[in-house]
Image (tube, rainbow, N blue to C red; front, side, top):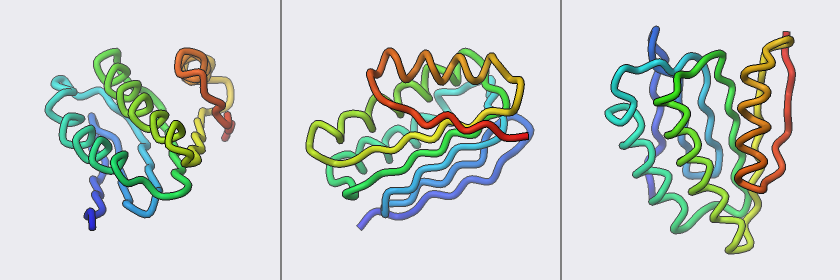
Amino acid sequence: MMDSVVIESSKKTPKVLLDPDGKIHISGRSIHEDPAKFYNPLLLWIFDYCKDPGKTTTVDIELEYFNSGSAKFILNILQALVGITKKGNKLVVNWHYEEGDDDILERGEYYASILNTNFNFIEYQ
């Protein structure tokens, strides 16, 4: 059985919840100067999870800002998770963005298009 991973947010890193029951949540800011150092352990957990995923996996991305280095790792996480749908598992991606934040909305739309996956776009105030 996999362990849950909980990382509290800092000024430069997001809050992360990785739950083997199929709940993945990333929120806050992601402007780490060395995103590989932060995201590589998370990617390893995701790859491990994808070997035996839950029937439904729900991903909530609620980032108020992320830099280009982080963007690559977020895409890698989402790419790995999209792979579980090929095994018949369900993937729900909720992309949260602040009202009027077109940059974050457009980034989510871009990810959805290149991953050929439906995202739920959820606007908040």
